[in-house]
Length: 127
Image (tube, rainbow, N blue to C red; front, top):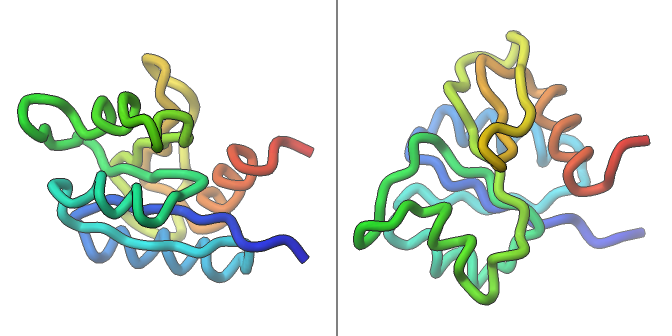
């Protein structure tokens, strides 16, 4: 069996984090770590070495740079896929997603199955 893929979830909203974490953990393929404070996100990401980073939007700036810019320019993290999470509301609603300005995104409302499907496509590819 393959080791689980590591997903770092950077989001200040506990309700959103809980929905996303539970959906991914239920799939049984992911180890999820949550980080609520953007200021410590880079340190958490370096320590955790995630396969994917899910980041709430809009991202706060740190020392004048957006968090995604910090991730993209970090020597350890720059090749890690980064996905923006939009306004997630309920597990029973439909997702839209895609690529916008070079970033992958999930925009809500979004359901658990959609989260899993989107993350699987990013980490494992399409069937």
